[in-house]
Length: 240
Image 1: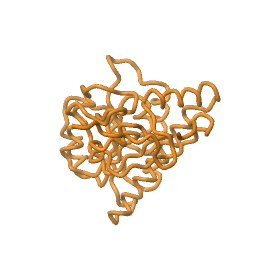
Image 2: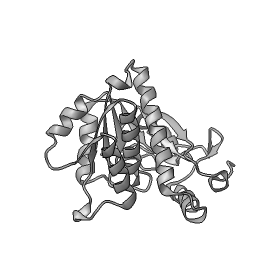
Image 3: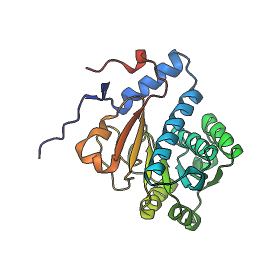
């Protein structure tokens, strides 16, 4: 079997690995001083916009729409919480389900701040426990589900609460908008380890990732949107 060819350029942008994207992020925040919270706000705004577009395609007014957001405990989850807040402000009824912190440790500073803003805006948020009945009911009643569990910094088979939420999202058969990458899909290869999300739309940030463009991953990625979230051209680099 021939190896799948992944393009080096997509929509005029260079296609990058997870490590290369992490370096872009570091240069923007560490070297140029761009606040991480600002990038998260822009990322969440892009996800909320595409979610509203998907609702419109289905003939659903945001004020009559129900959206559920499944959030990991890191930056990807924080991006999802921004989208949750903006969708709530647009009139959607929004509930967020959170992967609990590891071993009782607190959430990170950025995640905690975005959670505070989301709940202040009226987003219903709760940590996932062992019982999934409430999640199942909520997902089944949702018009759209946001997958904000795992970003491009994650690899390996999803475990714990994240594993469970992926399974329940897929069982719900609701349309999914993936935040940066469908959870469980490897950002560099596009392959999965058996537990993964199949999205209707994937909103990735800054630059397209290699795994999202792998031919075998297209059925999981759905419609791919590359969102400009404020990375300067100097750190994005030139397409070659």
